[in-house]
Each structure stands twice: as structure tokens, then as C-alpha cells.
Image (cartoon, rainbow, N blue to C red; front, side, top):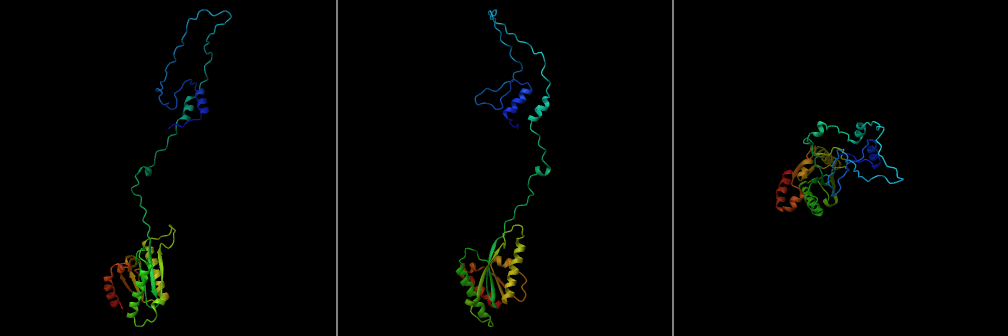
Length: 248
């Protein structure tokens, strides 16, 4: 596309090229299409008779000197748009091999633990009421304490819980995929077991069993459904109790 010149510069170009008539740059609404005149019309002369007394006749004198030769090619070159470079092969290829951005991994685990007894890692959905989860885990830890004759204490006074949120930080430059999540959850479970001398680990829910599966020395590990599953399906508690009895 041509770029519109300032009016002063446009008139200067036309004057330098000796152009006396030119096409309009835009078509006016309702105006007929412009037509290029190849030749100028002959002047119309009328026989007005002899000039009046005291009036000198007007004569048209031909041009005595030719206009200076103008390099019109150089002037028009400035008006033409510059040619764009051809697109590279990489730009012309369809973007079919572009990797799609991976969905951000995000989850929350609940840690419930009693020192010297057991730790529960639960991955119930966030919509599950927290008081119901706390009551269930407290009763579950109480049942485990009845199976362990060496542990003494009060579940109500000894129960501690906290949340594990992934990703740990909001920096997108840090690797926070599934592998990093498993390493972080495993490290958190190991640290709590060593700090509070916990011999039993219950991984409840799919995410807890997946990201919490690791090599825990001197600990017994049991995986089952999430707490929300047992709250919605009370009859499933029977199978969990049988697993706890066999687990010891």
C-alpha cells in the first residue's frame, strides 16, 4: 500500500515533475471514475473582431526554453512502498509441532498425626467439610491405638494436623511436575515420621497414594480410599477395619 504524503510534499513532487493535472487519491462518493486525458483539448477561439481602440492584442508566446530535465525515476522511487523480505521457511511452516502448554499440577494433602502412633495423609476434595474429616481421622487413630497395646495417651490431646499444598511456590521457572511433587511429599512424610517417631503411615485417597508412595524404612504403610469416600459410603468402613486388624 502507498503511504499518504503530506500535502506540501505531494504538491512539491507534482510541481517538480511538471504534472498539471492528477488523479484524486481517494474516490469521492458519487463522483464519476477519473479518466486520464491523453491530450489536452484545443483552446476554443472565437472571432471577436478587431481589438478595440487603445487595447493591445494579447498574444500567446510559445515557450522559449525547455524545462530542466528531471530524474522522474528517482522521484517516483521514493513514493513506491519498499518491498518486504520474503518470509523464512520457519515462518511459512504451519505451527503443528509446537508443544502445548501442560496443565499446572495442583493439589492439597491433609496430614493428621499422633506422635509414636500413626500418621494419616488424606487427599479428600477441598469441598469436604473439615470437621467431618477431623472426627473421622480421630476415630480412626483411636481404633489404631486400641490395636497397639504399647501406645499410651490421649488422641484428642496428641492429634496434630496441617496442610500440604502443591505447588510449594508460585515460581513458574522451578520444576514442579509430578516427579518433583512425589519427591516433596515423600520428603515431608519422612521428616514427620523421623521427628515424631511414627511407625505407621496411612495414605488415603488416590493423590495421597500416588504422590506419597515412597521407601519409608522402619514404617508400615497402608493405602486405601480417601476420608470423603468413607463419609459418603459408611459400609466401606468395614473393609477398612478389616485391613487395619490385619495391618496391626
